[in-house]
Amino acid sequence: MTTITPKLRPSASARLAPAAPSLWRVIDAGGRVIGHVQARADRRGTRFRARRYHPPTRAFRDLGDFWSADDAVDCLRFSR
Image (cartoon, rainbow, N blue to C red; front, side, top):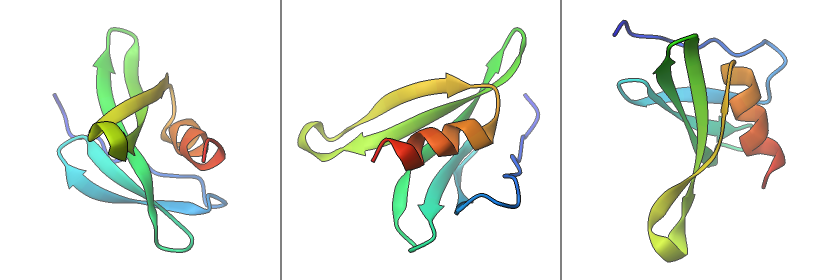
């Protein structure tokens, strides 16, 4: 699998920081980590999964799969 580095639209109020291959931390304008975006291969192209850590269960919860990194980041921003 080739390495994918998603680019967010210039107006995005969050940024991505590499966390692992095909995984990025989503950091809001205040510097807080609000979740992760994971690139996943799909037979139709690359999907971006929005994930958020759930402290009570000590596990990540998948919020959805999207065709763009921007949409995955928006999911994390708006679901807080």
